[in-house]
Picture 1 (cartoon, helix red, strand yellow):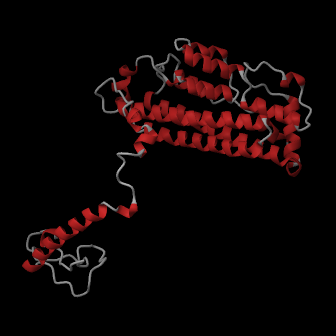
Picture 2 (spheres, rainbow, N blue to C red; picture 1 turned 90 degrees about the horizontal axis):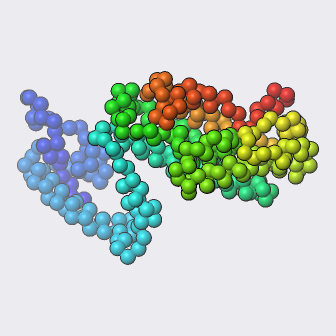
Picture 3 (cartoon, rainbow, N blue to C red; picture 1 turned 180 degrees about the horizontal axis):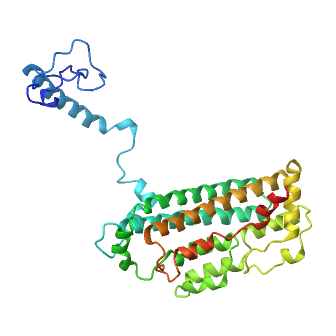
Length: 338
């Protein structure tokens, strides 16, 4: 590197201090990288000329280096690029604000990214349910842990939407029409897979037969917890036939035989270690889901107060009622018995 002084133009020119040089080391880098102790003092005409020459040389060197930047591939004209693999063009062009309001983009991206995370959560939950059905519990534990982390990600996402003030939301709300997160088919499938079944929630999806079939299939299938209860029976616990053969379209009931099984697991974890770990993974999952619901209602209260939701519900009061839903009842009640 050619040794130069710092050009005088880099000095903050204050009245009466035009010739004062900064204390930074010489050589072009403020931290002194590559500089030598005998670099000429700043402010001289020769130094300024040398600085210009060095800048030109550095620019030339940088350009040459860029073509072999850390041996990275830079030409993707004949191979798949990052954007190609991720299909970024359709994703990044899927935001279509219906107004000129600045904050509508935030609202759209907040909900689109949430839908993507829910897609992954459903993907992992479905695989975990299959693993439990096949008695392959270690892979199921990994998948359940991932779902819990996804829910934590969704919890943190509310902090971004919470930067929208009531005034900002009110100005863009007319653009939403009757659209509402209440109508999210992925969220409804997630609720059904976790056991919060309600056949009335099929109605919002009747206008889309393709989506309706997916939500209906989730309603009619055993929930993840139903599959775990079957696992308890296969491991020798006396689960009541009524619980094992129940109507899958109904919400998860509290069952004394299931609670007795979990009580045995928690009292003797070393004898039932896989089931003990499963129980704790489920508690982690429901805990994360409760936090997501809580942040949802508090964000709604912060932005719209207690107005009616765009989907027709009474807004925050409806969401607060959902906080009382318990997905895995025996796992929470058994803690009182230990």
